[in-house]
Image (cartoon, rainbow, N blue to C red):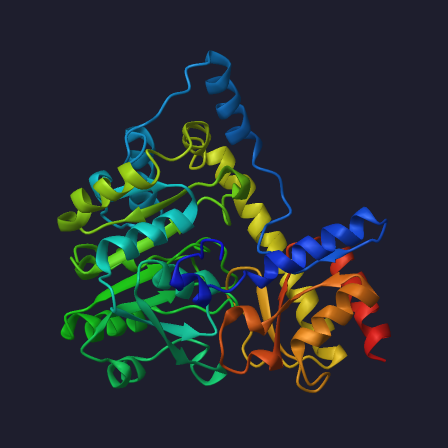
Amino acid sequence: MPPQPARRMADIQPFHVMELLRRARELEAQGRDIIHMEVGEPDFPTPQPMVETATRFLARGDVHYTAALGLPALREAIARFYRDRFQADVAPERIVVTPGASGALMLALAVSTDPGDEWLQPDPGYPSNRHLVRSVEGRARALPVDAATRYQPTPAQVDAAWQPQTRGLMVATPSNPTGTLLTAGELAALHGTTSARGGLLIVDEIYQGLTYGVEASTVLAQPALAAAEDLFVVNSFSKYFGMTGWRLGWLVVPRCWVREVEKLAQHFFISASTPAQHAALAAFAPATLDILEERRHEFARRRDTLLPALRQLGFGIATEPQGAFYIYADTSHLAEDSEALARRLIEEAGVAATPGLDFGDHLPRRHLRIAYTTREARLLEACERMGRLLG
């Protein structure tokens, strides 16, 4: 018998959207035209001020490791961004720059999770969360959520699900795959529940900035929560800032956990990408923010174009997204199985969308996640193609 992988690998499922993207690329290589509405990646290029900053840095050739916690100037820039944009007091010393938000999630879970610890997570939710928990020998426990609560967990639900082995709760605002938000009051109430139980709260703000009809916010704008010793906040340069391929994110850590997180970062990563960190120094410049805000308005126009077009085709949308760039659509009136529907869409119509299977076990075969990360004309063309296929 050949050597076998670790037992935990039996519980690690593939990231289905990446498998779908691979199939899309295969079809494109055969000459097929595929409209990409599956992957959570903005179609805009990295803003030019960031590219120029990275180019000047690389031209010097002095590309070495940074400190494990990140480039001091970038940590200070992120802290200023919290203060200037959200009036949130976040010390630079609490900010850890990471290889993408995935690196931030890895650190938060690895520093806090013992074997057998349980993390409560909304279902549907971001698929990697449960697998990252399993990779540190924890257990993910699903909290089924639906449109009645805007696909977000409630304090009562968290309290009822809490067990002696529960370590904490993970939430996202805006969320993936539904694009819904948690209000400041709801976040405070959820933190009150986890804190009363002696647990932790991890808030994913990866899509912060991409909101429509409501101002962007952070849980850290609430003074009581900004100083909480049982709250981790994950963020990213990928979505609002358009730096997906640069692989850069950050984690806001309670002061009492910083040294422990630093030790893990030293061993896991050495440091995040140095060129990416230098590019991100220009992320908060006024010229860059002007570009990013215009892109946010473009995402809003795409959302407002796609929502009625999908409804006309028979997709059910009970809760309209207020953030991110996804629509979580009910396909039960169109097909018995959203996974089979997704296969038909890509193979027969050249439209790639992600089946609910990626996001958990709560009614996954009734839903598709449809991303509006391509231009309006292509979104409308996708709807025309789906209309022909669906009859």
